[in-house]
Image 1 (cartoon, rainbow, N blue to C red):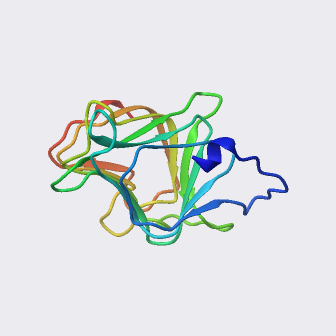
Image 2 (cartoon, rainbow, N blue to C red):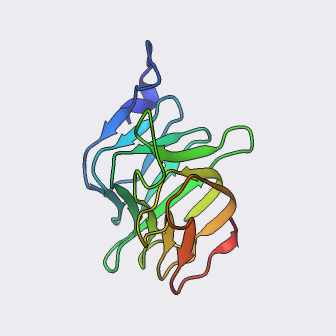
Image 3 (cartoon, one colour):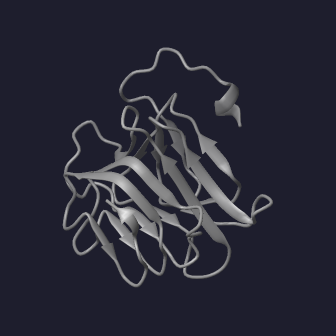
Length: 173
């Protein structure tokens, strides 16, 4: 909530809000006014709000940076649901990238949509996923889930951009 009412001045290319927890259990909206740096892997999962789904919403133009070898997990193999709503625009895409001034393919692991990802809510639209992946791990992995992807661009990822196990990707990347 403080980001919604805060103003930021004197920012440079390295400025970011550091996200240090490992599980997001309350609904949140991350503003595009400052990048977010994921310091340790983060899971979105909980029973918050009237819909009992913990949802992270990213504003158009938001940037989420990941430290080396980190991931964003949406849902889990069991338990409460989680959802990611990343609806950018053609003019203001949402960027998932490396938290590095000299990134390389495979710097961070990627986005993982798991069994309890809320399919009705979870969507990526006008997003860029770059510098993710690792040996045998795609930059975006879909388990038993069916997120909606529209106009998702992949760049400089290691191994492969997208894979899905049993779920169905709705729309197209």
